[in-house]
Amino acid sequence: MISRTNNYDYFKPFKRKPAVMPHIQTAQYLIQLEQQLKQSDLWSGSIPSDTALASTAPFACDSLRFEQWLQFIFIPKMGQLIEQSLPLPTQISLTPMAEQAWVNHGDLTALVELLTQIDNFLTRQ
Image (cartoon, rainbow, N blue to C red; front, top):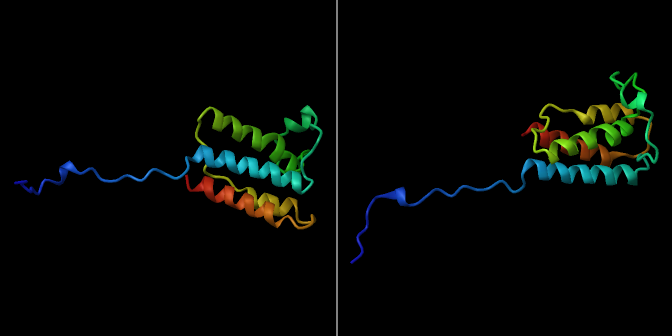
């Protein structure tokens, strides 16, 4: 006969793994961002000057347009963090910058929504 005990130590609690690790999800967002920038004709075929890339001025005064900053600064730097498994930024606000920079552009709703998703995802980490 099998004896029953009240020893529940035998059963280990089920631990759910996260569906997607933050670095993998962020990499997927970067791919989507690149695709959306290209679809919106905001992807640049030419690299800005070294001086423009080295600028530390705020966006309102900067020599780079916001979409250039995304393409030549944000995406590559985030890619480096992902490749090196370094911590991702958790205090980021791309959406307000996009809304300000693209106020006179056509319909970029999908692109702004993607940036909002990126902001929300990174700030939850």
